Amino acid sequence: MNISISVKQLGKKHPILQEKSITLDTSDSIVTVRTFLELIVKHQIELFLASSFEWEDEDTIHLPKENYLPILTDTGKVGFGALYNHNKIDLVTAQENAILAFEDGLYAVFYGEDQLETLTEEIDFSQNKSITFIRLTFLAGSYW
Image (cartoon, rainbow, N blue to C red; front, side, top):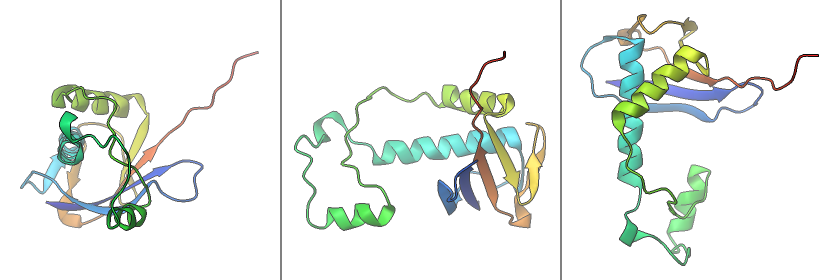
């Protein structure tokens, strides 16, 4: 199922990720917020594992080839694929962390103009609304 996602952060003019279309591994047109978050995490882990280098593929001299630099600059971020953390990602733990962060209010999820507030709410993807994740940051300070 194809959906459109954008990621924003409060206080920033431009979104972190603007209207990206992704395909989720589900055939259901109605899913709960919990299932949706689990599918998003699974999709992102698959993307990360597909793009990351293995130990023997590490670029030690960090010199891009001639055709590599324009591709990186088109994406908006130039990096040379160096991975400093080679730990394996546990899918279940990552999904639990995403759900806990949602419950704790670290990010908000909107389906069109409607905020999804509980994990049991249902999302009807047949309406073709975009999904927006808003990363919330808390103010630091102390009480007098």
